[in-house]
Image (tube, rainbow, N blue to C red; front, side):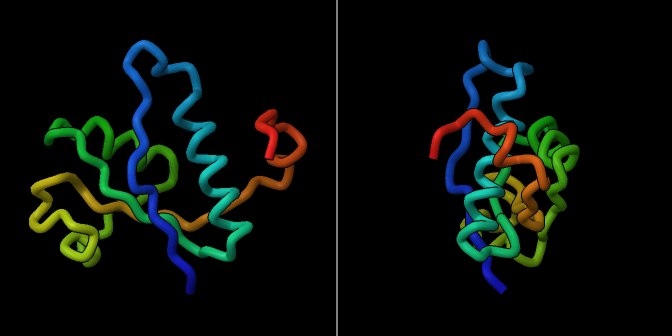
Amino acid sequence: IGVAAIIYMFVEEEYRKRGIGELALEVISAIHAVQGCDFTVLVADDKGSGKLVEWYEAHGFKRAPKLQNMMGSPDGNFGTTMIAPTAVPSDFFCRCKIRW
């Protein structure tokens, strides 16, 4: 089983709600899938508000408490560890306008 991590992803507030985060997740998942990774892990740090964790959950991620300490966030001090299977929609490479 291959696992890849998103180390840091951030969308500036003035660019949010434009689909940039969703596109970034799709591209990252496609890259991870092409590299043979089965899962993507990350630590969602929303300073305890829960909003970012909910956003990732809405985009297919699940909380991964058994990975919390390994991902450098013991007891959730620096965010919530999350995991999702990598997946590439069948039409992704046709509709993605990002040049590889």
